[in-house]
Image (tube, rainbow, N blue to C red; front, side, top):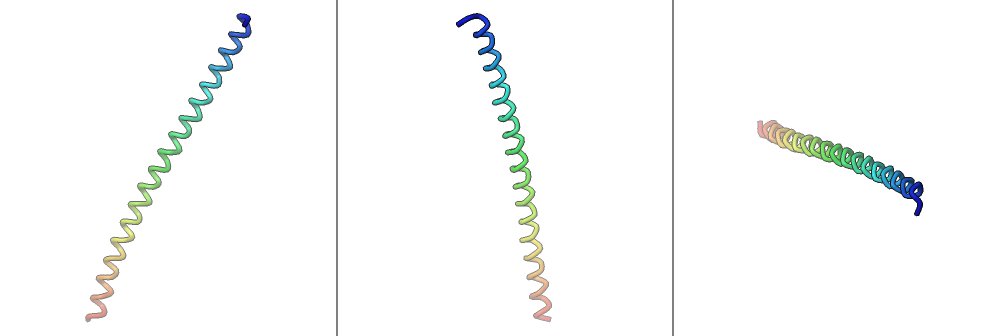
Length: 65
């Protein structure tokens, strides 16, 4: 391998590694967004369950009055 060929190979390898790193960072960011959205969805579901329970209590109170 000539010196120029080795340098070109090193440049290509470096560029490939930077591309892999960029994709990994994007994947991590996407995973973090999904985790945040899942947490928010769980919070909303818990709130819906709480409101449903309160509605059931009020409904029973109205039926018994």
